[in-house]
Amino acid sequence: MDLKFDSQTGLMPAVAQDRLTGQVRMVAYVNREALEQTLRTGNATFFSRSRGALWTKGESSGNVLRVHAVYADCDADTLVLLVDPEGPSCHTGRPSCFFRRLGPDGAVESEAVEAEPFLQALEGILRERTASTAERSYTRSLLDGGAEKIGKKMREEADEYARALAAETDDRVLNEAADVLYHLLVGLRLRGLEVRSLLAVLASRTKQSGHAEKASRNR
Image (cartoon, rainbow, N blue to C red; front, side, top):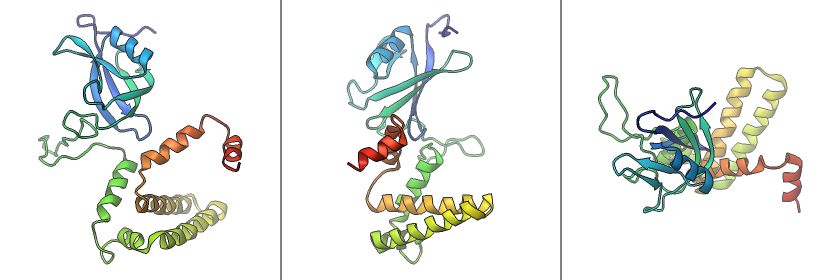
């Protein structure tokens, strides 16, 4: 199926989405030339309707979008660019251009709230909990206990998950898996590591078999 650029403008919308977290970073337009340049260089390039010219994201700010893959929708008239963003993608300095949440009445809320996948939002919640006290926040109490306390809880939760996996209900498996994931995220927060970095490690491992990857770590 051929791509369907607008018959009058020669453009089609292109959604830039973080390939690891799933966060939508921005939406812009491409013509054939912009798409060809994107595919050739690996850097997201769009067509500016206001300037009437091509522009590569980050050419002045340095906040480029490295394109991992490009997909067309079922009608072939809209694209998704799966990207590795370097720096914020919005001209306001925010990671994503989508941070103006609508209230139930359709009005734009005054407080800026980033649109993000749940795992990324959960990471933000844990980050906020670090400012609380151990009396009010279990997350803060774990962080105060350091690697020893978090490691002990990880071992406990991993054992409970293993036992649920072997002989308990699906509901128990899911709940124990959630406990493992929560404590894993708290451990990353202790070390100041981001979920996206973890996902990047997992993504890099898909390029080889699990046996080969483990063998390379044991050398």
